[in-house]
Image (cartoon, rainbow, N blue to C red):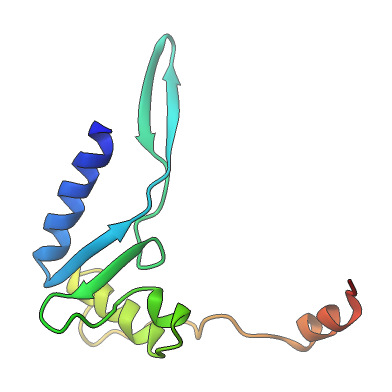
Length: 114
């Protein structure tokens, strides 16, 4: 419980500092053994896929809810979060285009029956 509270405090401050409200997040933990000493560690990513992030002023969703609610602009929202956190520079464009279905994927789907 104390680890979850510490992570929440850290992430809330981090996102508030860049104008983003951390609404909630999921966190997975694990046990790490070092000889007879056991520690609980965070064993998960922190990303717009695992958090609900809203713009502090407009309440615009900057997370996976854009996809879940068919709001569009998922790549732009994730890019905005990355730029505010300093992970991407202002002029930088995201690499790749996201998932793309190939003809092989479509053929595989058609041939895999119930």
